[in-house]
Every structure is written in structure tokens, then in C-alpha cells.
Length: 469
Ligand SMILES: Nc1ncnc2c1ncn2[C@@H]1O[C@H](COP(=O)(O)OP(=O)(O)OP(=O)(O)O)[C@@H](O)[C@H]1O
Ligand SMILES: [Mg+2]
Image 1 (cartoon, rainbow, N blue to C red):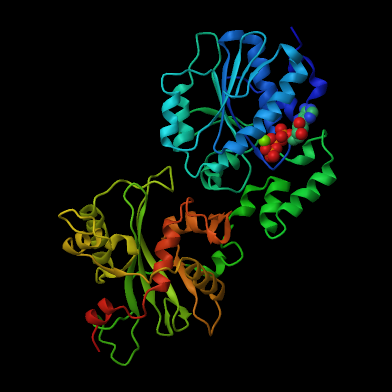
Image 2 (image 1 turned 60 degrees about the vertical axis):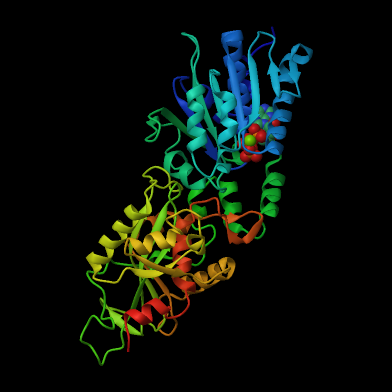
């Protein structure tokens, strides 16, 4: 039988050789930047596993997109043909390799929930998710672990390969990408023992590194931050991919207010121009639901800071979000959500009125009417945020964020207490098909609610009614 790769260490770069020495009981996150040889390392690990366990070694690699799957299939074909020559069996239709000792490597596309059915009841000893940054949420990736089973004596192992950027950037950063390399830890979400390995193209002596770096820079000429992340493997520079150059905590973050400033109808400051307060809501049930208590400044000072006229402050946040997944809600009913919003309004002594996304006013045909109707019955009154304004809404948001801190221009300010906003908005990726838009599969719920707050019809009718002159 041909020799295994670990018997040919000269074929591996130093980081790849070190990766091979991580105990097999540890799952691996192969991160860093583009091109260090992550996929090649995976092939080397599969080869070693196959050589040691023969037909009991059953490997699976999934990718989200079909073209992506073809790329990895071509890489594996080249690699395993170099090792086994004509003894390798490859079924291109089924995307399956059978190695001379009987081990199998199955490549597959896993795009959405129903695709998962095909793995039910199946067992694999090694499972790898390549380009896992393409998964907006970790749900499918985690679910694959249920197929990780092997006979006694055969180690099971899970591999996550990823590059910075992409829709899954947020959960990968939180769980794996910013861990120190080579130091074992327990993944807080799955309880699995993990080791993170970060390498960059500079660690790959098998390619023309200067040329590769130039190509990477050319590939993201309009996106210097992405270029930096890919070249240096620095996942933190993509913090703020869409709003990156307009958000600055020093300018946009305000310390939590103890109470709201004077408002018409609430405070006896007749000679003081009042602030306007209102809610802005983005609805979700399976997805997160987010509501902001917003205050628009008349051009006044509050809590030691002057807010130019028209400035918007997100004062408080009510977000129903799964603790481990920014893109998942808590499945609360409308009355339950309304009751949380009412508690927030009670705490701040403000009216439960404001704007919400258009979709909640669609008639469902059911007896309860639209979601907007349900909210109204539960005591929370929403009117439509301005229609069809997604990209122009983002532009307004960018402008207000960048003008914050200027003495004569309205800005957007967000309380430190709006945790979901600070957790998600600064790192929202762009939509790769339309760089002017935010990727709508990323956790954009706080951003959406914020956008409704900024693009509402000025002095919405409901607010006029509530605070008459
Ligand atoms: N040990 C090695 N011996 C020979 N060639 C290698 C080795 N490691 C990597 N390479 C080559 O370097 C190139 C990049 O490797 P690979 O595709 O594995 O990188 P990657 O980190 O998966 O890249 P990406 O970030 O694009 O997914 C490939 O052409 C691969 O064949
Ligand atoms: Mg790769």
C-alpha cells in the first residue's frame, strides 16, 4: 500500500506537521487567512485516518455551495491520486472516493435544513465543514455532529474550516476564530474539546506567496479590510464590515441614561423644546425580534452632552435573541413580546407607540388579523416604517453614524445598554451580490429596527396624537 502522508513529513509545512500532532481526541478549527493549506491539511488527516482504520474510516466533507464542492473534489482528487495512483476509486456522480484500504470519503452539499435528512441514520468517523463561514448560523453545522459515530477503537473527529468574512463570521469569531492557536479549550456551545489553528498564506511554502498576495489584494480592491483579513488572518478587522468606517465607539456610544429627557405632555417645561420619543421594531419569532426606545433631539443637552437638532439616540433595547445564536429568536408569541415591550415602556415612562417593519401589517387571513393588529390588541401601537427604503435607509444610517460628535449636524447615538446592537451591527457583512446592501442572511435585526427608527415619517401621526401642541 502506498505510504501515508505522515510518513512523508517533508511534504508538510511546519504548521501542517504541528497540526498533525494535535491529539485526535480534539476537534479542530482551521482558521486564519486565505491559502495556508487548510484543505490540503484536511486531506492529509483523512489519509492518516483511512490508513489506520481501513473500511471503518468513513469521512464526510460538506460545503454549502455546489461550485465550492467541485473545488474541493478537484483538490482531493489531485491529492489522493498523487498518493494512490490508479488504485484510487472516484465516483464523480456520487462525489465519493474509495481508498485502496476500503476507507471512504464522501463529499456533499449541505445548504439548508431539508438537506440534512440524507444524513439521518448515517454514521461518519470524521466530519468536516469546509468554508463554514458561508453558514449564516451554526445550526446546521452543529446538527451534523449527530452523525459523528464510529465503532469502538475508531476515533471520531469534527473539523471546521473557515476564512474570515462571510455570513458566518460572527459565530465563528465568538466560538473559535479568536482563540489562541494550539491551546485546547471546550467549545461553549457544543461542549466539544477544540483546538484552533490560525495560519496564513505566508506559512505556505508551496505557493508563490508574492503572487498570491497580489491576487488576493486585487480580488478585494474595493474592500481593503477584507484584503487585510484574508492576508493576515486577522478576523477582528472585519468588525464593522458594512458600517466599518462609520462606527466608532468613542463617537457613537453613550452611557446609559437614567431617565428620558423632557417630552411634550410629560414634563412641565413649556419653555423648553421637547424631545420626541417613540419605538422602532423589527418583528421576528423564529428570528430575533428587536425593539428600540428612541429619542429625537430638539437640539438640546442631556446627561452632560449636547445632541444637535434631529439627532437620534437609541436609549433602550428589548431584544428576544437566542443566547448562542444572534440569528435565532426565542419563538415568543405576539402577546408575550408585547408584554416585554410594555414593561420597557413602563420602566421609562413612555408611550408604547412607534414604527415597525411593513410585513407585520400584512393580513394573514386568520381571525387574529395582522401581527400589527395583535400588537395593538395587546397594547402596543405600531405604524408602518417608510416603505421600500432599504438601501437608502442604510445610507441615512451611515451618514448619521459618521456625523455623530459633530456640533452642528444630527448624529446617531446608541446607548451602551443596547447590547444586541453593539454585538451585531458593527460586524454585519455586506451582501456579496450587492455591496451597497447589508447581507440579509446575517443577523441584521438590530440594524433593521435601527433603520426603521431613522426613516420613519417625521413626527408620525401616532406621536402627534399622543403629544398634541
Ligand atoms: N503540504 C503541501 N504540499 C504541497 N502543496 C500544498 C501543501 N499545502 C498546501 N499546498 C498547496 O497550496 C495551495 C493552497 O492550499 P489549500 O487550498 O489547502 O489552502 P486553503 O487554506 O484551504 O485555501 P482557501 O483559504 O482558499 O480555502 C494549494 O494549491 C495546495 O495544493
Ligand atoms: Mg480551502
